[in-house]
Image (cartoon, rainbow, N blue to C red; front, side):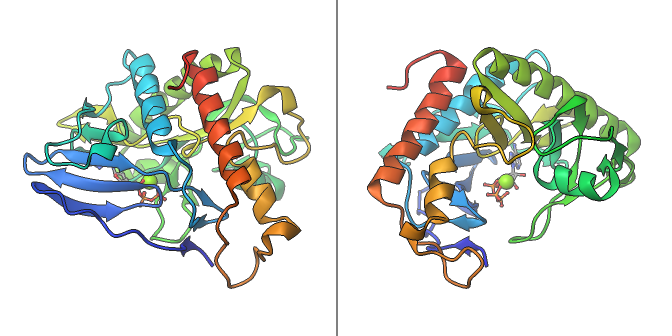
Amino acid sequence: MSGFVEKPEPLQVPGLTHLHTGKVRDLYQTEAGELVMVASDRISAYDWVLPTEIPDKGRILTQLSLWWFDRLADLVPHHVVSTEPPAGAPADWAGRTLVCKSLRMVPVECVARGYLTGSGLAEYNVSRTVCGLALPEGLVDGSELPAPIFTPATKAAVGEHDENVSYEEVARQVGAETAAQLRQATLAVYSRARDIARDRGIILADTKFEFGFDGDRLVLADEVLTPDSSRFWPADQWQPGRPQPSFDKQYVRDWLTSAESGWDRAGEQPPPPLPEHVVEATRARYVEAYERLTGTGWS
Ligand SMILES: Nc1ncnc2c1ncn2[C@@H]1O[C@H](COP(=O)(O)OP(=O)(O)OP(=O)(O)O)[C@@H](O)[C@H]1O
Ligand SMILES: [Mg+2]
């Protein structure tokens, strides 16, 4: 079972057309054709969008994405046009709204991995490969890879997990030249970000980018290098051979799978609301991730 415990209704904003309600973000289009991405305080875990929000999460992740876009701009242009919410938008959209150039999206989830875990580990355990790329023997959950790898996935239908595909499959779908551009940009951006995060005591295990075309120019889109699109691990707790604690969601996961929550992860019932102490601890982790990465205080 998965999905929304309670799916929110889109807001009616004059001049904006609602396009999509994602797990975490709401998408609108302006009359000029620009894309408006509004990050909510929703949080997901175990494939569920939980019924409890984490205060400030939307603003923290939006500001983090912007901070990264700035630090990557010499590697690849990004899609942000303005951080000013459109006229008539609710006041609480401030700080969590990105007005973006609407791009012709490349239908590939561009994943870079520097460490082995998740779906990469599952494939490795069967075939010693990830997305068809051969890897050395002896790697375990959380191992650092000899070098970062491009492990693309294709977007699955709503509710399904994305499917890992080989580089050759991407080249078949989008053309050899675009595939090469995606791989090059993905690995360049990942490597830059991994080094920045490492200096601040955070392991960027893997991350997902989306790109689109503005004419024939490849542009970095969506959100970038947030805890929602990436695996961040506290470096001081990294210990290959077991699942690594998640920087942001560990309290949520631990509580949901504890006896206290009363929730059966394998059952049919949606997860219950989070107690205040879990909300507070989780909010503090997002603030900490922001502060450690950017080196500036969250106000
Ligand atoms: N500049 C852009 N131009 C056009 N589409 C974009 C741009 N940036 C991002 N997108 C698209 O906007 C959508 C964002 O949706 P969002 O990620 O919120 O929900 P989702 O992908 O349906 O679900 P999930 O919450 O699982 O990611 C994606 O389909 C993404 O490809
Ligand atoms: Mg998405």
